[in-house]
Image (cartoon, rainbow, N blue to C red; front, side):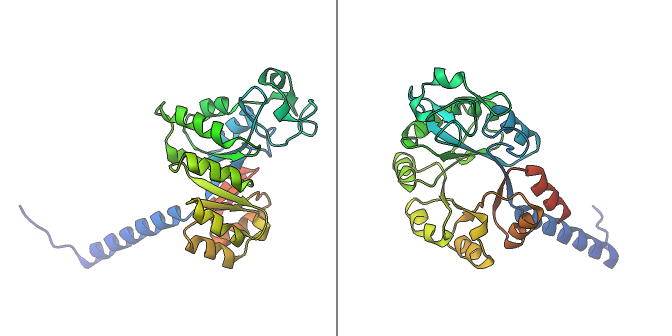
Amino acid sequence: MIFMKKSPFVTHLISLIMVSLLTSSCEESNKPLVIGHRGAKGHVAENTLPSISKALEMGVDGVEIDVFLCRSGELVVFHDKTLEKLSDGEGFIEDLTLDSIRKISVLGGYKIPTLNEVLDLIQGSVFLNIELKGSGTAKPTEKLIKEYLKTGKWNAQKFIISSFNWEELEIFYQLNQNIPIAVLTGADPLDAIPIAKGLNAQAINPNFRALTQKNVEKMQKEGFKVFPYTINEPDHIEKMLAFKVDGIITDYPERVTEALFED
């Protein structure tokens, strides 16, 4: 076998290529996740299967939805406690059976889906952030997730369980310590650190308006990812990118993707 001595030019070229590849890899790993808020709320009625499908088409890394427990025991995907604002129905969604909910249409003529239907649609293609919106949602959500983990299309890291109701998060954590948890907060995000530590949470999901470079760095230094909500305007997106948050929850996934591409 004959070995040829590399010229200084070739050696330098190889070094440049290696540095370029390493730099590109590092930059890619530092890009925040794009998380569709209630699907792609800016384009299709929130928390509906078409909205979630739209988010998937846009190439999101994850989807955020809200769940309530209806009267007949199913988990339904809806944001408000009452139906008037987002649908042609009336009253509290928790007071209705699934059969009654099936007869209701949300804005745009879409139906209110069950959590089962959302899981069947996504099939583990992206991660799902399930916000426990209603009371008593922790136990049935954990039970349903365990059923879907058996299918092989989902794994524990494809889920994030979040809530403003930290008691529901505590219940969920007592039932299952393998599914990632995110602590939702609308106040000073640093106040969420103690409960996040107690729940061994993966992330803190703060209102983006409460964020500064300093408190983002503090949360990350404490070991938490930072997934702020709900960032839609270009200048706000750029600000979150400058803060180096770990994920951006948005009604318009394409705006975040465009900003990432431009950077």
